[in-house]
Image (cartoon, rainbow, N blue to C red; front, top):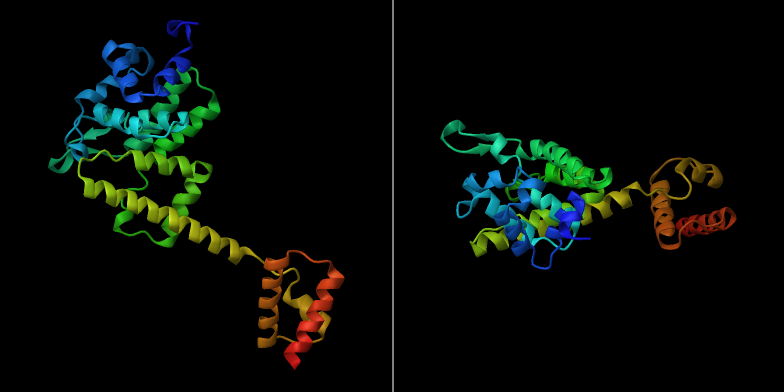
Amino acid sequence: MSATELAPAERLNEILMADDVSASLWAAIDSGRIDTLVPELPALRMEQDPIHRHKDVLSHTVAVVAKTPADLIVRLAALFHDIAKPKTRSFEHGGVTFRHHEVVGGRMTSKRMAALGYDESVTDQVAELVRLSGRFKGYADGWSDAAVRRYARDAGPLLGRLNALVRSDCTTRNRAKAEALQESIDDLERRIAELAEEDRRNAERPQIDGDAVMAHLGIGPGREIGQIMRWLLELKRSEGELPEAELLARLEAYHAELLG
C-alpha cells in the first residue's frame, strides 16, 4: 500500500515515527501534505511565542517532536501541544498571552484526531497530555507536597509520558536554562517517588487492630499498645500476612518481652 493509500491516521503516524522525525515533519509541511492531515498546524508558522523568541511556534513544535522518545502517544502530544495558541492569543497588559491554550488545545486535539480516524483510547490519551502539558510551569518557584501529589494524581497512568513531554518542551538555546529545567523535572520525579512511598507506608495497617490486641492480651490503652502496634506493622512489612495462630503466639511472646 502506498503512502497515499494509507488511512489519514496511518499517514500521520508514518511521518511522526520516522527515524529522522524533524526531516520527516518538515518535508510534510513544506510539501503541503500536512495541511490535509492537521490543517491547524501551518497557522503556527506565523505565531511568535514570547517564551521562545528565537523561533515561531511551528518551528518550536517540530523541535519538541524531534526531542521526544520514539513513543507515538508522546509524539502526537508534542505535535498538538501548542495547537491552540493562534486561537487563544491575546495582547492584554501590553504583551502576548495564550491563556488556557492547553485546555483549548486538548479539545482541538480530540476533534482533529477523531477526524483522522484514531481510536478513542489513543485520542483520549493524547488530548489529556495536551491538556496537562502546562501543569509543570511554576514548579521551580516552589510546590508544596500537596501540589506534587495533585500533579501525579491528575496525570495518573500518563505520568511518565507527561514528564517525557515536559522534558521535550524545552528548546531554549540557553544551556543553563535547559539544564535547570531538566534538574527541576528530575527533582519532581524524585519527590513523586518519595511521596508515593510515604503514602504507601502510611496506608499500611498491622494485621490486627488495637482492639483485638487489647482483647487478646487482656490489657488496656496506653503507650504499651502503641509500641506493640508499631512492632506488628514492622512484622507485616518484613514477613507479610501470617497465619492467625502464629501471629497471636508471636504477639504473646513479644508482650512477654516487654514485661521483662
